[in-house]
Length: 126
Image 1 (cartoon, one colour):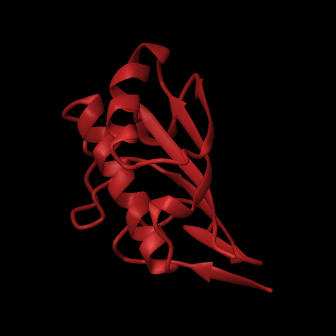
Image 2 (cartoon, rainbow, N blue to C red):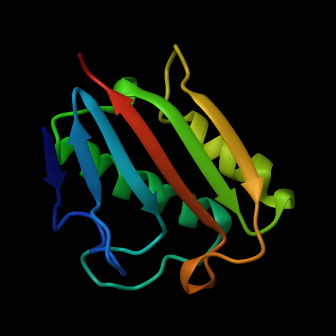
C-alpha cells in the first residue's frame, strides 16, 4: 500500500511526480530545491540560504507525513559545484544530532531552475 504525500508548505512539484510517497513505513521524499513555497521565489542569496530553504522544504514534507529528521536513513545531495560542499555540509549538519543518515554528495552539470543544491531523502519509521 502506498500513500502520496503533498503539502502546501513545500514547493509544488514542477513535473509529474509527488513530493513524497509513503510505503511500508518508508518515506521517499523527492528532491527539494530552494523555492520558498509562500512566494514561489528561489532563495539564491547564498549557498547557505539555498541550503536552509531546501532543509525547510524537506522538513515540511517530513512533517506532513508525521516524520522528523531523526527518521531519515538516507540522503542524496546534488551540487552544481563540489566547491560548495563545505558550506552545504555546515547547514545540513545542523539538522542532525546523532545517528547520521547514510549519504552521498555528487556534483552535477545542472539542476532544475539553475539552483546550486537539491536534496532528496528516504526516511523510515517502523
